Image (cartoon, rainbow, N blue to C red; front, top):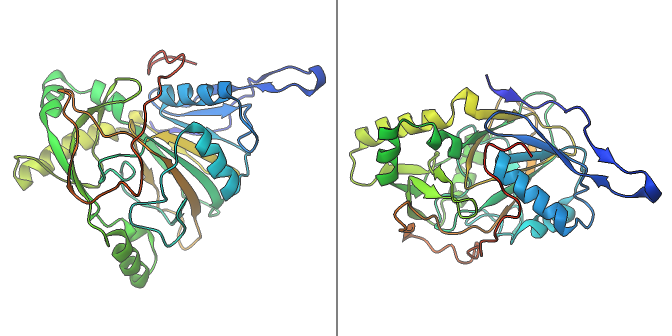
Length: 325
């Protein structure tokens, strides 16, 4: 059963001496993915220890949320900059600004953000701006746990596969009118990007093996279209099994971070004609590395203006995906 977010019992250990700071806590929300962090004010000057706490929680739980933050664009960007190096808003979509992507509607399909470039963003930071009165949740799936749960023959097969990712995929179906769809698709695809990624890549910070798939995948190298679709469905279905997914039900003031190297997500378009507006900032990532050490290959497009390649920082205190922290 999909694990749905509810506000946890307050387990915060606070000291009352002269207004000293609250000790941050993290509460797990699902077996394989999802947690909520309390006791950190993202609008302030967060400490180095708090940064490492967030990074460690994210590495363990893959997607973490904060309630009641009520950030604006400036404070969202400032917080994100403490975690890593922000990218531009998007390789092609610049109409809503250069430092953040304004998401109107919902993608309504499973994907890893911007996987069609060589330097896949490592973390996405999403903030609620305007929410519908119902619906509009975001689902998250753990692509590390999905790989680990594969039968050995499928793991061996996945380790050997390479996939072509392209921005020719049109997820503008979140827009209401044909005009909106056409204009968004034109901007989204105005510069073609195509990259060959390993289906299984090594997480740059944890070393875990993770499936890199989602709706930007156009084919598997060396396989016919029907073979690709059959295998893609097998692996994708493993990623999105209900026991590997949790749902974040948005509230005003929420901020959610996810490890884009270890997850897929799905914005659910179930809110009718109501407005759903979220702002996203992404952090520079590294070029994916296959299990044999080879790296992703650019076929079309230059993403160097969109993002630098990340200098991998070792995680302090990371003890593995199954740990309770």
